[in-house]
Each structure stands twice: as structure tokens, then as C-alpha cells.
Length: 374
Image 1 (cartoon, rainbow, N blue to C red):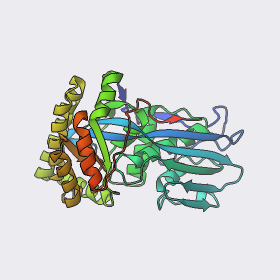
Image 2: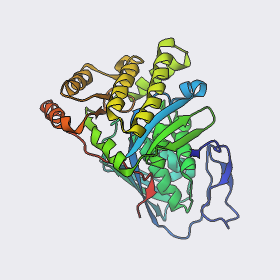
Image 3: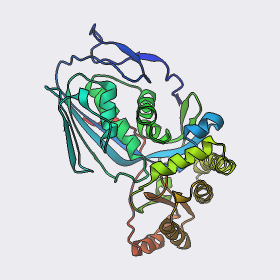
């Protein structure tokens, strides 16, 4: 069991522990001050998994978990965000991305903003403030807006690469909490905290959220059972999610106002997540599919735009051909459709969805969270 309840603990973040100019700062402070002196300019490459959430999404938003406690069942998958960070002899910051086919250059890391598609990476640099220039490049195995937690993986992976470049060894809980702080508090994005923890810790987990802590509890299943769970799970990309921020903002607003329908739906979603844990531990994937279906129906009742006629038609077709249950991953409005389906019925489902121009994404669950690849 890993707890982030110590997030208020003060710890030093600096590259050289013998540097008298280095200072200490709270992990959640606005700046994490580190040494401005570094003996050489190495390259740091991090590899961070995306995540697949079975249930509990929405209960990881502060508007809900601060009052009621949240719970998510989530697994890391072998689709990665890769961050390559190297030091520069000058003060410049150069950021590029294979996903966006874009390059941005700043004359100084002290003169950056956190706007645009590179906002997350720039916010990490602004938080750590290395005191020398950086060259940053990223690429990923899945498209942005996929609903598989890529933004969280990007923040976590960038923190891992930058902190490693600076000689810091942050614990998984520290990385996840700094990533959450950057996205939610610093950039004020209307998101939850499950993605940052799932990508940091890796594996298949029950993640519990309260007003003052996050607890990550690995689900104790064998490697064979994890492979079998993967065999029962299908993923299809329905198109980029274009309104996830507005969906989450509306959900947060309804939850903050204590709107009865939204709160009741989130209570149901949390309870279904608890039941999913038991189904996974028992290897009862038919029951898991039924629970995912019930949870998806509850989630659709919170915000109208979580689903769409296109998504409903695709989901109805998959269910007609043999899928037991499913859901749109992430906030909704698009992204990947997850289906729970018996392996012997998947060929029929796959053929039907291929006719509507949807191709299956093959994946495996992975036990390893964010890590340095070189």
C-alpha cells in the first residue's frame, strides 16, 4: 500500500547535496527550487504508460472525493509517452513533439508561458527551474484526446525525465502528487487525480482518494489472470475527445452544488467500482462486463455530452454482436471505447466494428510505471 498522505512533508530538491546555494521547498509549493550548478549535460529518457480505467471515473474529482471519498479501478497498459530531455549550455528552451509535429523555442527558461499544446511540459520546467537551458522532445503510442490518460502520463513522464536529469530520485507518490499539483492547482485544469497515479505506479490497482491522501493498492492477481483480463478487454478509437474539459467542468459544477442526480450517479459508480474489484479478483469477467455496462449508464446520466448518438450506435452494435459491457474511456465525448467481451465472441464483434471503420487497438497490461529508459 502506497500513501500520498505525506504530501505536506518538506523535502529538498536539488541536484548537488553539497551545494550551499541549493534551497528546500514544500513538494506542493509554487516553485521547487534546485541547484543551478550541474557538472555535465546528460540526456534523460523516460517511458510512461497510459492507463485503462475500468470504473470509478469521476469520483477522483475533488468536488466529489473531498466529501465522499473516491475509488477507481485502473490498470497501466503498454502504450507509452516517451520524454527525451537534455541540458543545453545556454538558457534556451526548445520543445518538440512528434505527435503535434511542432517545435517551440524560447530564448530563456525564465521567459516561458504555459499556454498551448506544450503547456504541461513548460509548467514542469517552470516548477523545477533548472537554471540552464533544456532540449525536450516527446512522442507517444496513442493520439492526444484518447481518454487513456495521456495528459497525465505526459506530466508524469516529463517530471520523471527532468528530475532524473537533475539527479533527483523522487518516490512514485511524490511524482504523482507533483504532477497532480501542476495540472490541477497550477494550470487549473478541471480534472481528477487518477491518471497521474496510474501512470506513476503502473500495474492494476485500486486507487482511493480522500481530502488529504491518495492510497494505491495493487490488485493481487497472477500474471496469467492479468493476461486473461487483457484477453477479455477490447479497445476501439472512436475519434478525438474534443470537449473533455467542458464535460469535466459541468460534472464538477453539478457535484459542487450537491445536485442530487449527479451525486447519486457518482455513488453508484463508486459502488460498481468496488464490485469490479471483487469480480476481477474472482476471475468473473462476465460479471465485470455487466458492472462496466451499469457504471457507463450511470455516468451518461451526469452530463449529456459524455456520450453521443455515434458512440451509442457503436456501443449498441458491439453489444448486439456479443460484447457484455463497455464504456468510453476518460471524460467522454470521444476517445477509446473499451469493451468487455468473451474471447470466443470477439471475432464477430471485431468484424462488425470494422464495417463501421473502427480498428481494434491491441494492448497488454503492464506492471511497470514511469521509469528511465536510458
